[in-house]
Length: 235
Picture (cartoon, helix red, strand yellow):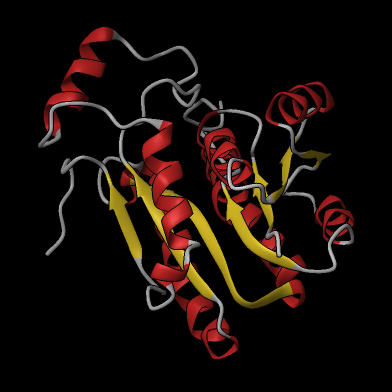
């Protein structure tokens, strides 16, 4: 039976690559994004279903969940680096609230909304970041909270045969994460930090996501899987 897969933030970057990887398996893939034009274009190009949904909006998330009777894989890929500047207390508060909303609460709301539709043997996979370990600021703090929440979720879902993991991505080239602010010097410095001397690709993350949703990964849950070429190591 074909699996049903939901990828939030699936119109570009990591989310799009993840959707393409599952679509290649003939899964029934659904992607979301905040803008109708980009959702429609990506869905057509990938041959998947598209839905306009701001994952930080409870009403929109509830409407999205109503589409599904059963869900086998949920990939929380929505997120990013909000463009919030300023040094006033109000600006600092806005920055932290935006990062928490986009990089933590989006996953919490989406997962909560579809929790009752997750079948035994299904997987919840959330996209984290190396920024949770170093130099992450409010963005990294939100991603660190994402990992803590995912571990707690794993304990709740585990008795039902459902896994929950985070993939902490390192520097991934070819995305719009840095919003045009990536310089050649910074690119080279980030690549040099890795053991294999290259940045990651969206396909690196998509491949790991696909594995975590496979039968071979059924005993992996409650974990943060670091995919960063050795730029940050654990032991």
